[in-house]
Image (cartoon, rainbow, N blue to C red; front, side, top):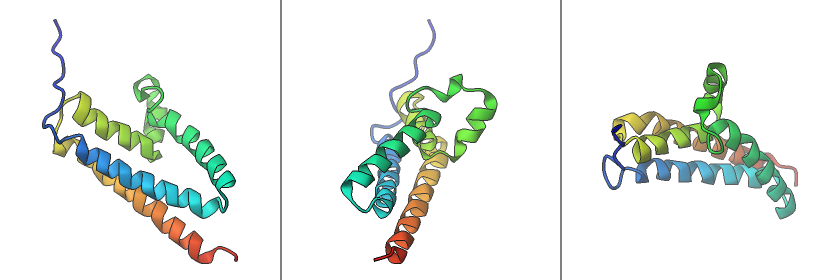
Length: 126
């Protein structure tokens, strides 16, 4: 019988990538709000953008089924890092060192999104 991965390396391990994903989601929301001035427009942008990043990021279909070149190309998609970090701690039972690349990339994307949103808010036409 094959060995089954442990649930987690520590009970609080999933909290680390989840907090980083929360920061990413906040930045993404601010970016959408910066471009969609009214709720209807923001809602449309949010649905479109979410659908675009979910598939290549591995949230819909595992990235393992993609060809190698697509797997490499999806490294620029924030959801890929979120899925990778959560997979490391929740399914494979790995710890902080193994999930650190994802926990570094997600706040990086969040900072990028927030900086772009702040710039847009400051430079938006009245």
